[in-house]
Image 1: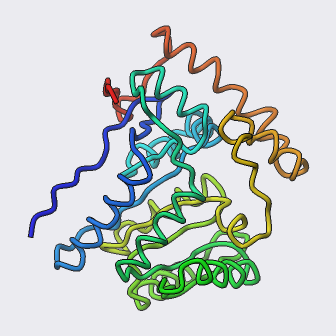
Image 2: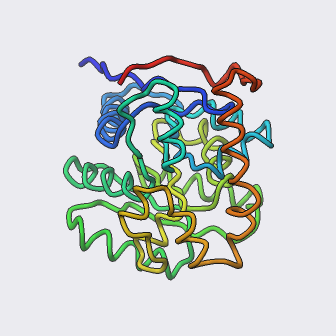
Length: 274
């Protein structure tokens, strides 16, 4: 048996390598990784990050977060500003690869191929709602387990307990639905402990698909205004992110295009024509 799919090339966007990819490609690569595991080719866990402007700026400020993102197997452009940035750097046909939508693509594929899914994040109540809604949409989906972590760092015994629960569930896909950069840090920390598992950090997707938080209409998303919609929905929680953090992206992007921005060598800088 041969496994020919390669991970997509990354383009450096203000110090973080963002993958030039699509829903279909990420889904096919995940199927390929799981096939490798089932064929008896052990490896460390793989992890996929969905990058928003907030995540990119967080990485810009925190070297450790930047390293974690740049070591990820795939980093999708979750927000339209990153799509526009990729296009400006030569990835001409790049489209958005949005975390909540990617989760649905992967769940559909998992249901069709019998892949075992684990849900990590959210509250017990939201996980229950999420499970019910996912099974309603994909009746043959195998949800092998779920875990709602406390709103604090896990103790060492708790960390090992969660790892054992995931290993015993024989999960192949682990969706991680906690905030950035916590979900990226969690996935990176568990690479060696969960061999062969594919982890995907999907952020707010749990709350969206559980029906607890409204998603922005499609036209708002297409025009890069989702941040305004989410700010209106949750101003107390999100005002700092959208009014103080993410506006810094535009001048950094402009500096990079002008060749005046320091680049992290780990991020890569492939020039692509897609």
